[in-house]
Length: 121
Length: 202
Image (cartoon, rainbow over all chains, first blue to last red; front, side, top):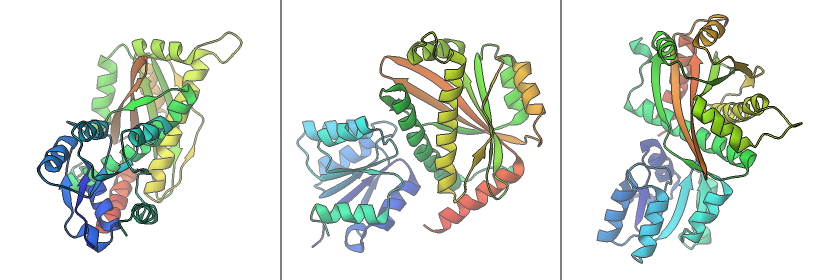
């Protein structure tokens, strides 16, 4: 089964880190966004099954993306991958509808466990 | 000096390593202050030591400076300075809520700075397969000559400094501080080597 994937992070290395941690059926056709605004525009124009989302980003940050998607009822499965690991931030993103919070640098095991838990593996 | 400049990929890699280190340092800060800290993307720039000292000399209003040395493997070492502006160090004192009989504001600023510096550098080191040890943090007199003197006393020459501008916004307060890592040329070359090793994996 194949799923459409969007990876949103302002760091090229962080995007690659996510891509190389994904199984091939998810990474092969993954699309990339370099800030929150780009991600929102892509999400408005096409449906994605999974969004990997950074929080601290220029233009529109991750919280802004979560709020926008919530307001516009756009509902990919969202996995937040962030260096901002404060407990309050983790609960905030979960309240805004993210499936899970993963700390940076993302680990392959953790990522795959989360994907499995939500039926993507 | 051109050997020390970072290309786009190296800069991106360093930025990401610093973001992760910042995130964990801010988490510690939030726990210490029992509050939530809004993070911004930290700006990083390489500055020559001379231009940095000139900047310090021309900027008369740096109030509190806490300095702490760090030592890792592979010649990665340096001196970390946390610099607070007067307005911000006052806010910090408010935020820390000085109580008589407790630690003085100075001691609290030293504690706070050391938490930020060591958490930041521990996480930074871990990501480049290194491990740091530290000297005791010291509060320097705010005057620029005191900072210059302190740097001049170090056992190695500062060729370049890595300046990481950190902005913390705490719920009701906002303060800025600059974390400046003074790193000798040999250590910068080592850091670049490690960054290239990381980049090769991608």
